[in-house]
Length: 516
Image 1 (tube, one colour):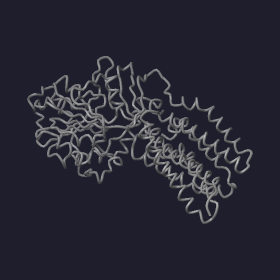
Image 2 (spheres, rainbow, N blue to C red):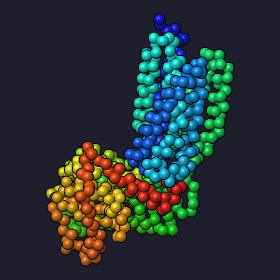
Image 3 (tube, one colour):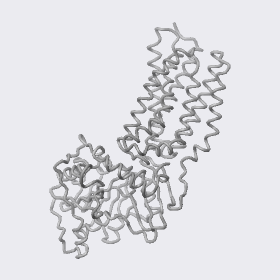
Image 4 (cartoon, rainbow, N blue to C red):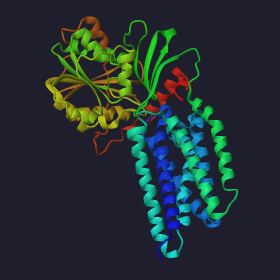
């Protein structure tokens, strides 16, 4: 028995509905990381929390949606979509209070609880659409399999298109809050259309009214929701620039009372300089800046993780070294040029490090590895395989300088030990230095080479040699794990560091600058 033209038209509308709601699920899930990351970092814990909450919400949505569909006499889909729209609109408004309320739960507990509170309601309601659509699409028992298969196939296709549309087109140009508000309004429009359809087809005269009431309530809330992410000035700091990119929320922040200008990405400080003269204020970069004094033959360098560009500028201005720079985030590269005076004298590459490294030819006398974002290191850049690629770009006497933020003793020390053991797997010689004397939580700078590095070089003056020797550090690497592309538990080993680092920034900047 074939379906009538009216039935086919009805199914086409259902397919459009599940397509759009399937796309909405992925948009909310992916944007969730951008809302949580500025506070909890872009770590595996944030991603795991979002994925888990999405799966829990969809499972419950499928179950509840099936029960509701059986008892609702083929009406109620419009109300489900309208409620999903309202909760989607509320996500940007609720982000700040929810993140602040969950701060005491720690990195893992806070990330999961925040994701649960913020995204569970809308995702659960969107999950209810599929079973309801199957009920409406099924006119006879022997068509259940075909109807359900088609419904879930179309929903999954919508999820794919939503993911690609967000990642390839929307997100590079539109802020996450604006996307969520637009998505909520789109769902309201869809809900009203579905309500009109339900009213005409099933004779339910009040189908449109609840949707219209919810839509009007949502519209009234939009101005407050859009303004909820504004950082209120508190007098201590001023925000010169802020831009949301594919990789983080990039800000340039000033504290005039301390003559300081910062470059931050999510929950990471990736550059600091004097406002008055632009001089670098991060001590670990001063250690790296002494490498050409140790080895005067350095002529060409590569900086991976450009940040504000200070190290490249020091190498250029003080030693005349041509430095190629590699930065993954276009927003960071632009901020370095606009606010920190960075002007490359070598190739300025914007792209993913693992990809771009494969296309570089070298040789380089010095490679500086300084990648840090979202409160965590990109672990895939600290593996044996990556270090082997970098070794292949070094000249025979070349030096790799690697900056790593960690604890040197006690809980969390295994991360530092693991990086040391991994470096030793590739480079026969390594030396280790700390940025701040007497601090356990520190920037640890590895100098690695195929040949021993002469720290007693006559090109270092006595003051430089004394300053550097005071910062020598020895790490016990016996409990370390060799990090590879196959086995890399670095984010797990750095949990204490991530939590501590976030609280350092909260103490320094306050919550207003970390929670949008």
